[in-house]
Image (cartoon, rainbow, N blue to C red; front, side):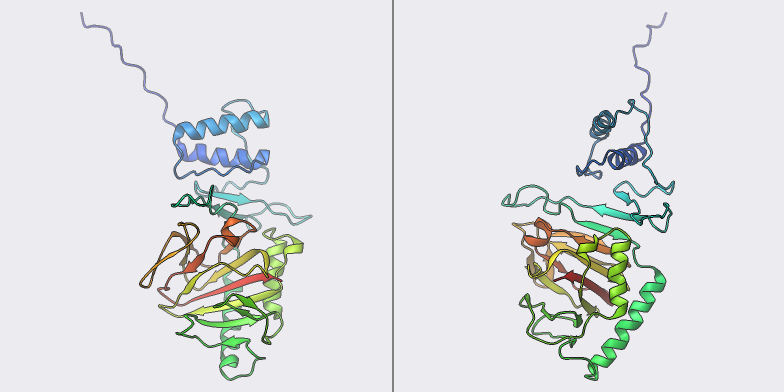
Length: 309
């Protein structure tokens, strides 16, 4: 007679994507602030984290938890949903904003922990209609600037010596080469950019006391870049960077917070910036100690950087 089988029954297949989303739901439910590097977590690490958060929430093991106000339109594994903060408004897809968080270690070991702790990328914050209005606004002001119809240094032509693209500046003059503030006249914040700042507050991306009152519009043509830098501490944090017209990337320094410049290439931790997204640099290592830069763009790009002074 054949020997009895000693093989174990097959273990049930785990949908790791669903378990990662469950982990994010739990994180939202219990208000947990730990960063989970979902791209690199093993299934065992995901299950361990779920059990830990379930215990914190007093939830029976293996029972799924649905975050309040969460849409059934589940984002990708490394995305979370920021719940609406508008008072008196219910949750809707238009209110929900996807946000991505990041993890990057210093290759030299000189800066401990996550270099990009707190950095957040919000997806589809600006609508197509709002983008169209902003692009028309930029084109109009650039034309007026070239004709010298704007106050002082509101418009700056591109400069190869300063390695700077064309700019529009509002609220306060910011020398983006020397990282100094003031010293020249510029126009006040236009209504359209003030409305954009208001939207970041109303959407819950910024707090009311963080509302920006200055703006720099960078108008990149193909091949132009923004050199490695850390923003002046004359501006409070967070800093908001809105990307328009095309997908580009931002590079953060991962060697003692510095970016290696090899020829025209910037070497560091690269993050894609989707069209109509907002990158938020909070008060922390990412904004204050780590350089960031825009490598030479492959097509025309417009960015609007909103700061508070």
